[in-house]
Length: 487
Image 1 (cartoon, rainbow, N blue to C red):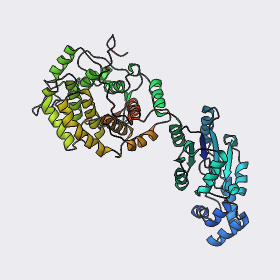
Image 2: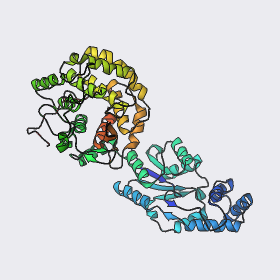
Image 3: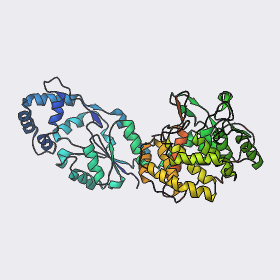
């Protein structure tokens, strides 16, 4: 249901104030006064300011006149949250003023009169509701119901923003979308995620950054590489989004000059030959060469370089996907058996040599199943993969891990609303998802991620939710460009 209404708190949201005064009343005591039953009555207009100050003065053994001075100084410290006011104004403009914005505050009538005199853009509010005027305060449900009745707002179409958890909890309990205020960017991000279509916003992010979806290290160095570009291409089937250096046979992870420093690798090559279909003879020629890079355990290596005898189960899975897609999976039986043992004994839970999260291993295993119609492979691997991905549902993870989990669950026919609920709020204000670490350089201690990949897989995850089976479009391979090189 579309969001049509926004309700915001005033104190510590639209306005900030300081409990530090020049009186003898400590800041903590001044805040404690605000949590007394006497103050609650004052906020609801049941007693006067004079009676309120007298009663709390007796309770805290403080002269009422000093309490009055302290609150006058606190009122003088009020500062408008300019960033939030600007953000609200922007939201209203974007909605062509169809978004109704209301204030809902626990504040007495006298104090609201002082606040109202403060210079601020009150026109951003279609109406202001105060506890002093209504005779009820948050978190009492009657206050919320009064506002809903007066505005004819539908709870499921209403966002409520407050800095107090108790107040947000009450709002959520009657069906409103509650946001606990932390800072303006956080609130604006949460509001946009609730108001906008996540897939449309994600796709817009990819289009706006097409050809510039670079990878980034955890030391904030951006660079171009082929692997994530191929994954983005496979997830979106949109060649215009990505840049990669097309190769006729074997591929390098890196692009440009960096490729000169590293040997070509089986991981990127296997991915490329399954995403960008080649002539069958050419593909078989490459697979024949891959068979020359198998160690004494019968496990395929990561590099086309006998001086780099590295193994990684995810690399093995991707090479298996290539071989199975061409009906040659049986030629790597010992590699497959090792991969199966890694899955069986959960050896992947701390990631692998090159891949950071356990979800990467499970994701590429599901991709392996999607690349092959081998009954034996599906019969042996699929039941165990179902068990292992179910074990991961609800586990801590970043946006990429969540997206991978959801995609795998969608492919296997498993409903995963838990991780979807965690993924959606992680969308950024610009429509993309944050960079998440995909792989790592073990010798350099560096991790690498790509916002484009996280976003592409998040979109795939959202669109796959509820589907009985979502494949990897293995039959929709992208044709190579007519001229090799970056498009």
